[in-house]
Length: 417
Image 1 (tube, rainbow, N blue to C red):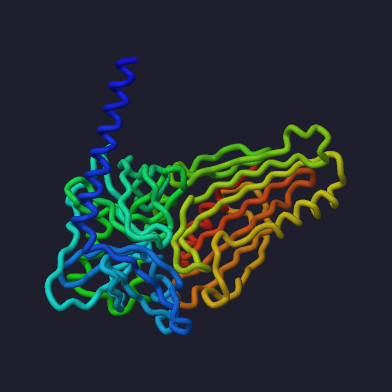
Image 2: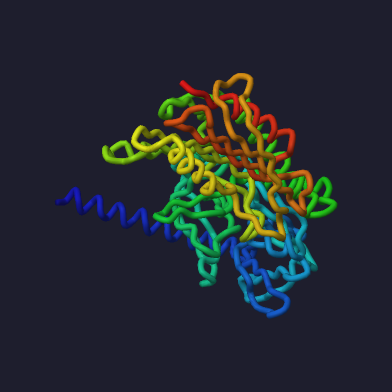
């Protein structure tokens, strides 16, 4: 009992110290913290809010891209404003963005040098205590203690796993170590004390690039970033190990990289089913936010195998062909963002495969980023009467030559066993 009591006192003492340290950090940093507001010009009201923090003495402020994305896409519709810890508010101008890492730099007018956050040179140690600052649910600035758990393994673009409450409105706020140096930027939450941060080196790179020379235009900057990111992704995928796995009587490719995960399902437990069906899905568990109704940067592969000796071949084929209607783009985009799909139909047998497919390859162009496309491929086997295999992929925001290289490798990797 005494040992338990001593342990309880120790825990209370540790918690009290952490709270005191968090309060001290907040007092020290509050003048350099801001609420970032997107204001709809027509109504004069807030459209969205987030957090931000000053990173230079001349008024540069870091936040998330998604906090100010409305202005980046529609500058005639919105204004950006800040609210500081003393209740002052004024306009901000957008200076630079990193759409891949969800970062933005905005600037306020200053009349004299101001205090600002230092960006750390080194990443934290695993298990190190950190402090997340932000404005959750428009309730005012707070400090949330948490723990650094390293980078998320399943992410293509680096994200820090942070054990702490990153709530709505805290997006764009800084996460600091005990020395008040920025080691991450709040970006997302999965609930249950699981938060994700953008590593500090991404912000440092954006800031240094801006100091060398601001972008000619935000739209051109975004286009170049999207192109580089998707080229890096597809090149990495094409150069990785493509493993063939059995699905029914077919062989399908899966890619041995940690950021693409696969899932499967079947009705093999249904002995009375007229058609035996098995489905496998592999996808990139992340995407790039452009606006609330426009996402890109995704990659998805899907395979469906069906077999039956209980129904006629004609009926079986019609049932299987209806699966084509369930195939859809892998990302969300509206008519203002992309053109209609243009599709090419053909009967193909890839050189290095042994399967005859009725194939459809579709593309749609990005209106504001003219060298980027969404692509969608569907192949449905036509060389057997009682079993069939559908193979499908979608890639969003990809260059034409890169998509064709992926198409060739994908088609040649789907085979009969």
